[in-house]
Structures are given as C-alpha cells and as structure tokens.
Length: 441
Ligand SMILES: NC(=O)c1ccc[n+]([C@@H]2O[C@H](COP(=O)([O-])OP(=O)(O)OC[C@H]3O[C@@H](n4cnc5c(N)ncnc54)[C@H](O)[C@@H]3O)[C@@H](O)[C@H]2O)c1
Image 1 (cartoon, rainbow, N blue to C red):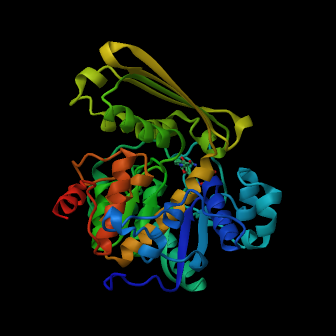
Image 2: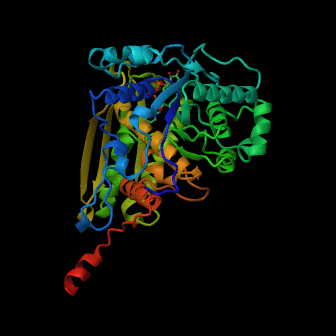
Image 3: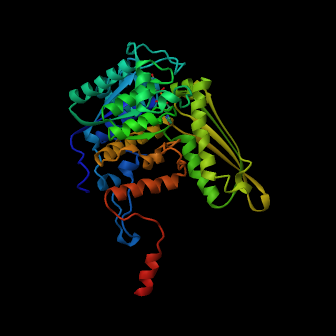
C-alpha cells in the first residue's frame, strides 16, 4: 500500500440525499452482503480484479485488496428525504427488493435509518409533494442546517469520514448562469435566495463546506458548476458527476464503441423506455425529462465523433424517450432500434430489448462511488475526479475538456488511476516487449 494514502480506519458514513429506490436498494444490499447472505454482484470495487505488471506475471489482485478501501463492515448509512418513511418502509414502497427474501430479515436494521428533514422546493421537482422539509427563510440558512446535520450525523455515529451521494429525484433543467460562476457570487445567491440555485446545489455546498466528498447521481447540475469546483479545490475535496450510468445508456456505451471500432456506420438510434417507479413519475414532467434527455443524448455524439467520420455518422438520427408506465414499477423495459450500415452501404438493424431493474444496476454504482471518493480524499485528490467517468452518463470534466463516454476507455482510465495511486506501472496494452524478450531469448 502507498504510505502516502491515509488508511481506511474507522467508520465511513455514506449520506444519501433521497431515501428512495436506489438508496434503499443500496442500503439493504450492503446489510445483506455484510450478513453473508448475498454477493456484491455488479460492484467493480468488490468483485473486480486488476492486472498488475506484465501478463506473464499473473498478478491479478481483487481491487479491494489492491487499494485501501473502506470495509463493508465499517459503513454507516444516513439520508435526507422529503417523506418521513424509514428505510424499511421506503424499500417496501419502492418494491425493488423482495419483502420475504430480503427485506424481512433486515427489518430491524432498516427501520433504524430514518431520514433527516430535506431541503426541498417543489418548483424544482414538480411531481413531488412531501412535508418532511426544513422550513427556513434563506438558502444559506438551509445550507447551514445541512452542515449541522452532517456534523451531528458524524458525531452520533462515530464516523471517521463521510461521503455524500445525490440519489434524490431529478430536478428541472437549469442552465449555468452568473450566480454559478464563482463561490463569492454563489454565496451571495444563497443569502438572496437566487432562483438559479436548486436544492441539489445547496446540498453540494453543505457537503463541500463540511469537507465531505460529493457525487451526483442525477443529471441536474449540482456540483457541475464553476462555483462548486472552486469550493471543492479550496476545501481539498473530490467531486464527481453526473447521472449514474445504468440500463440503456450502459448498453449504448458498450455497443457504440464496438460498432465504431469496426468502422460500421450508424444512421439511426431510437431508444425508448417504460418505467413505473417514482423516478419515472418525476421524469413525466417535461422539465425534469429535459434534464435527463440532455444527459442521455450527449453519449453517442462523443463516442462516434461524426466530425472525424462524416461518411459513417454525419446523418445519425438519435432519439431518446422515457414513458411513465406504473405497472412496470422499477423493472424498466427499454427498446433500442439501431440502423447500421455495412460494406458498400448495405443496411442492417440491431434490436435490443433490455428488461432491466434500474435500482439493481444503480446500487453497486453508488457503493463503488462512495468507496472510491473516500479513497480519493485519503489520497489527497481533490476537485473533479474524471477517472470515475465509468459510472456516469454525463461525466463531469474540466472546462473545455470533452468527456470520455466509451466504457472501455473509461475502465482503462479507472484502472490506470488505481495503478498510479499505488505506484504500479501503467498498462498501455502495447505488448511489444513480450516479443522483444522472446527474440532476445
Ligand atoms: N436507478 C437508476 O438506474 C438511475 C440511473 C441514473 C440516475 N438515477 C437517478 O437517481 C435518482 C434516484 O432514483 P430513484 O429511482 O431512487 O428515485 P426515487 O424517486 O425512488 O427516490 C428519490 C427520492 O428522493 C427524494 N427527494 C426528492 N427531492 C429531494 C430533496 N431535495 N431532498 C431529499 N430528498 C429528496 C424523493 O422523495 C424520493 O424518495 C433519480 O434522480 C434518478 O434519475 C437513477
């Protein structure tokens, strides 16, 4: 282990904003895994291995044995929500995990996790109407109350460190405006209740001010504004965002790089979804959907680079739809129709029908992000953590730097960052040295 990285000693508090489907699936999952009844399937940090050195050295430790991550047994959960339901009640409402197979056995532990009062304004999430809310006059007062929540949570639960992850509903689409540009203007905006400051930004501010790493699982801006980047650097805190990459976009960023690698053309990509959970209901509001749409649409353009390959991708028609359909609950169903072009312009089609479980895919992503952000903090890495792009639909990057959407490049970046942190050689996959050694021998 690199001696410069502080060891992961003591308890790690994972604070989720929102105690809905994703958060409760994460919490119940970690408790079940801790009890030894289940495996952390889908978690790269827990089940992934990483190659070190040459292929011939056969050094492939588990990621969690290679870098000093917090142990599952050392995690404590806390949350905020606009509804008073505890984690057990909320998990039952979300309907993701089976009551008899999973939730019943964890009832006592889950019931103890009661949400703190939220900072919320229905103007930013129109479809929700909860009452478990902090009633304070200014946004600055709300931020201060959140800072106090974090302090109390840490003290009560005897936490050495904490991380905060936004797992709350998608807010309406907001573009960057002057109040987001500097920390000074942002703090003035908090005092003046500037309408361009959404609740997600108030949580981000409170997190960073408390020295707590922050990740944003939804497509709303939150930490993706210059003022919060400035604060993250000032407080030496890592940040990452935005919008967990699960389901359809995960498939897209697996498939599109493959088609492009063989120089196959793509004329059209039509993606539609039906889902019936609360997230689906929130996204039924056109302004919340717009935030999601922008996040989902950016992926293909970046991977396919039509400017470099006009003959293959110039005419690409990309459409994304999300439809709220209550009978399906959290079991989202997505369809993709992809019109591809091959040799001499002959047309082909690919159809994907993914019957997925949204929160089952998202929970391990939240776990990995929490553990890696905590690692980054102990390794003194602050500001935007682009190596965590692997987990996001719209990776946050430095101003002017195009994000990397190709999942294979994202994984290489993640793995090389872990090797770099631990002082191991980076792996380029060039591999010529194997043949040089062979010829010399
Ligand atoms: N499940 C996935 O695969 C996936 C993928 C990408 C992004 N996301 C995003 O993750 C978020 C959570 O998804 P979910 O399925 O758990 O949704 P959910 O509706 O089940 O849970 C969200 C919770 O956030 C609460 N909430 C809303 N505003 C709040 C605020 N200001 N403060 C505190 N709590 C607040 C809601 O009351 C709700 O309980 C959504 O924004 C969703 O778009 C999910």
